[in-house]
Image 1 (cartoon, rainbow, N blue to C red):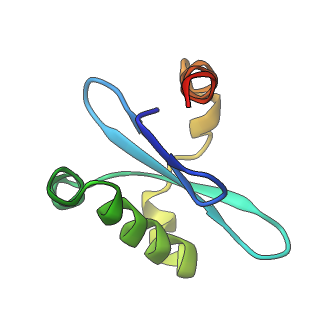
Image 2: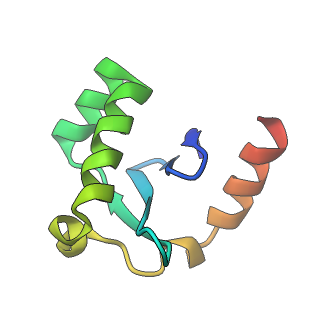
Length: 91
């Protein structure tokens, strides 16, 4: 994990991708995890967390628009729990 806005989003990075997990919903909360496209990665590199905030807001406001891109079971992928715990122990 390389960045987080608590109760809004978490950004993960590995050697080949950036994955954004966005908290969605109002009564029942759930996450939508998407791999960032090239243009979104470039926006993050240029605009930092503000660019991630904007994208996360779009995902949160209209999660159905991102369902085709969602990564089912992302939180169960190898290393995700460890990355989250490591980030939170340092921040």
